[in-house]
Length: 147
Image (tube, rainbow, N blue to C red; front, side, top):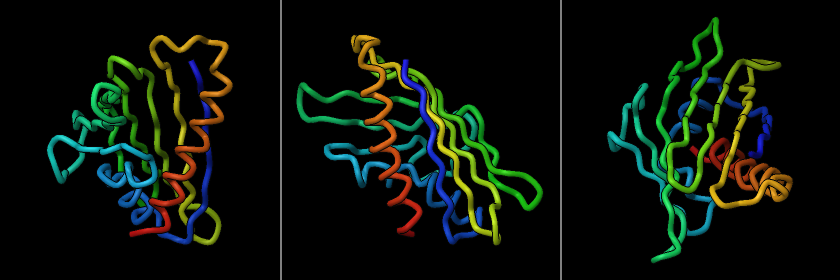
């Protein structure tokens, strides 16, 4: 099991950063051969929403199925928190997206993730952590920069 986190500060209001980070269909923009869908399509997201990231091609594709178990958009007096439980046959674990007001009113984002990839030996967890930070860091950067 690999656990990692990353933090970003963006020149956005927290509610705008939240909106950009939870546009699920955009999460595949920076990951090759990945398409992300949500049920219900187009939202609104709420507890129980299913998000599926399908990665690969043909017989080498797999689905990372996630269920939203916590959905608390940011408010003036409290941070936003979204928790996704990974329920796929290949990828298990969870992801959390936290958005709060940071210095100067800018959005402060914390992304936490725990990944357990079936059939991947535990001695590769370090590689999975580095890969996860890279892939999800690029995704978060892209989502925060593009409306």
